[in-house]
Amino acid sequence: MSNRIKKSLTVLFLIVCACVVVCLFFANSFVENKLENTLKTLPASVSFKYSALHVNVFQGMLFVENPELELIEGVNKGVDLKIKLEDFKLKDVSYWEYVVNNTIHLDSILLLNAQVSYVKAQKKSQDSTSSDSSSSQSEALKTFNKTIKIDNFDLNHATVTLFKGSRDSIFLKSENVNIAFRDIHFDAATAEHSIPFEYSNYHVLTDSLKFNVGEFETLSLQELELTKSHWVVRDFKLKTKYSKQELSKVIKKERDHFNVEMDSLYIEQPEFGFKDNRFYFKTDTITIQKPNLKIYRNKMIADDNSIKPLYSKMLRDLKIDLTLPTLLLKEGYIEYEEKVKAGIHAGSISFANFNATIKNVSNTYVSPTQTELDIHTDFFDTAPLHAVWTFDVNNEKDEFNFKTEIGLLPVSQLNKFTEHNLNIKLEGQFDKVYANINGNVNRSNVDFSVKYENMKLDILNKKHKKNKFLSSVANLFLRNDSDKNEDGFISKTGQVERDKTKSVFNFFWLNIQEGLKLVFIGDGII
Image (cartoon, rainbow, N blue to C red; front, side, top):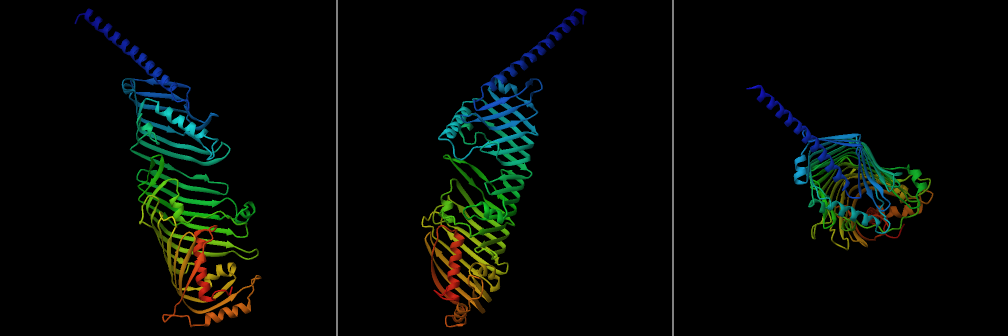
């Protein structure tokens, strides 16, 4: 090859290299300008700030310095959502799809140590401001005419803070949140949906979470894990912020003092979303392991006279569509304390080894499908108790049936409640108790049967001392065997009017109390 040809090829190679360098420079510049122009066309409700933006078309890389994303809410231009990073780098960006097909296609986004804050709007909005703002955001989102594809999105070790109403009131905080989405797709079609993007799977994992759920209670979780196939909550705690004594000083109407814990809550195959502008949630099974509920109420505080609906109505009136075929409670413990008089200990009722299978917890089924609770537990930690409670959510009379069978029980156990709350002290033993309650929103009938041995009853006066006269009269009834059946049972039937300002459990207790009164001391003695 002659020197002339060699020089020509060298010159040609240098020209090509120069052209490539120039093309890459202009390509990088072109894509950078196009991206910057696109960011300028974001909806008015979205603010994206950064110090610098760099593109390398050849390597398929995008680098943004000090990015900060804000979503603006309402006429006052308050920041609704804010995400702040030191910087982030995107690899394997398909600029060709962006330039030619108007599609932003990213292989992966990895965000480390993000600072995320979100202000949860108050329920009470000023007229239609909130809804109008939400509507304008939605319309602005739909006018964003790009297609976005993200194969892998990972947010690792983020600090997330949710505020309620303003940045002065923390609703939730976690300092180690990890979120992953796979195959994210956003376009004009998905923008029409309530959740404006699609995905093939997700994985959310957090360390401890703390919620401020209201004026009186806090909720904490040790770990939360969410995937498309299951949700898991570990070490759940719901507690009243105040002690029992402190709560009684700060409330004007009676309110339960809570101490609720559970080892874990497992939700299988959760599905959620919107249908016809109504949120829905459904799942195959929810399993709660070792729930522990301790509830205390001071009855000396003024009554809360608001109407308390039965559970059938509460389910029927839910603002969401709930479909839950099976709810399992395993190895639980429940204790309820009620204080009715100063200077006297609160009476208590407890249920140990509490296991329940609850079917059809839903407002989406149609009649005659019923919600059914099948409960096995140890009443007062001693006597085996089996109860079945059924009702039809669609029955607007809120008709229900509750039947229970209680095994061998030393009645001294009942004194934990009756002595302090009913001024009755018992001795002896229940061999077996049956109760069948048929009721509705207004009243109930109770069929009550009991077999007992060596029963003795003391009726106490207001000073908590034995009333000898009433006790003697009551014990005359206890010693009278004329009411006993051949099998040794005494059976009575009573009626109870429901106090609608009290809970469903108060309604059940009134039925049991009526049965006990009719069996042991007759009608009208106390």
